Image (cartoon, each protein chain N blue to C red):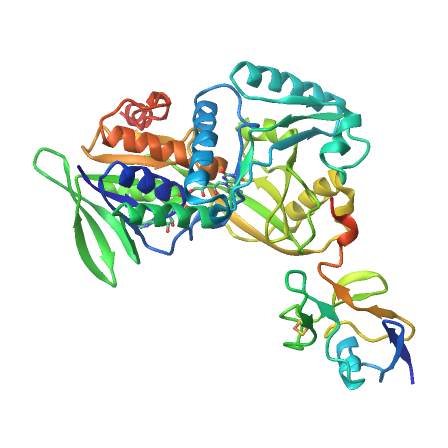
Length: 386
Length: 89
Ligand SMILES: Cc1cc2nc3c(=O)[nH]c(=O)nc-3n(C[C@H](O)[C@H](O)[C@H](O)COP(=O)(O)OP(=O)(O)OC[C@H]3O[C@@H](n4cnc5c(N)ncnc54)[C@H](O)[C@@H]3O)c2cc1C
Ligand code: FES
């Protein structure tokens, strides 16, 4: 069994620790901050198959929804606020409805269950929807968790399987043996530099993975993509499923640098309704943009007219970790033996975490992976740079 | 003296007073029932920060009584839960 240091106590690091500890590895999770204090506490908890087109990310998502189901069974749905509520994607124009239906047909061929919803049936799914929408598609497989609670629950389970979780530990780099294998992880703790012996290190530092991978000496490109979330005052249950507009589908896949907004509305256990999500590439700028907030609010009111009678309590922002090709980096780094990356999940790191953790554990334990790992390999950047 | 009503009862106030101050002066300390455990609530911080003092004014829920200026003829009513029960599905 290997001594594995997982860097990052966010959703992805927690899922890696969970799977590695179940395999019997000696796992230490380190984070410079608290549990889930990074992007994991800055987004929403949508676990979506509905927004992904056929390809490697969809394969990872389909595996993840199955694993989330098992995790909820094992650890208790309430501890994660896991809800298999399904997703309703609505079109606001006939044109987007056509594009959405075509997209859904391709997804169905790739194994996604989905059902077209006629305009007259929309209110049966969501009574508060605007009455004039041209139609939509329902995806029963979409789920939701509370990301920070899910992260804490997976770390708790990992600790029961023997893992250690340490906070206030900033990773500075790794030391290697003469044969190039990882020997230890160099960290700063209370101002002092300490080493943690390790056979393997997993870089699960999300939006900071570009920086941390460079410190380790095995750089991968991970960049920030800003998003705002609007939070309403607490309400009774007003939205049953996750509801979003079909524009989201085209935005996610888009490579455009500018602002993209398309509205995602979800209710939470706490009663607040979350309205997401914008996408902008503006570095790590945390300034609230009222123009963006206004656009998002208007889009939300377009599909749920009652929202114009509801107050917003606050707006928060986060930075999605994205790679230039919009696929996460999961796998062994060929430059330093024992270095693994599990980062760059962009707007789907919560959803994709369990299948990522499983893949890392399979690779560290020397098994073949459930989902083909090759498309996620860090080598795509190594050989690009060479 | 100008007055507003609280659950139908006339409440006199001095110009410049908040709804919350006028209610306290009239001996009323609670005007909201919490959404989870149905506990009574009124002023807590008194300065617009804590949102404990929410109340319904002229049908609009979730107004901070400590910030809302009292005005002649407005109708203030006890708020139960989120104040938006009509939206539940
Ligand atoms: C607005 C918005 C909405 C989103 N909505 C969704 C959604 O609905 N569904 C979904 O699946 N995803 C969503 N996401 C994306 C999701 O939040 C991220 O993909 C996910 O949280 C990434 O998790 P992570 O564990 O990789 O990173 P993080 O949670 O950021 O964890 C990385 C950790 O690494 C630590 N760290 C960094 N550097 C060091 C160092 N040198 N030493 C030690 N520790 C270090 C940090 O402190 C941090 O805790 C959204 C994101 C945003 C911004
Ligand atoms: S009493 Fe605190 S906001 Fe009114």
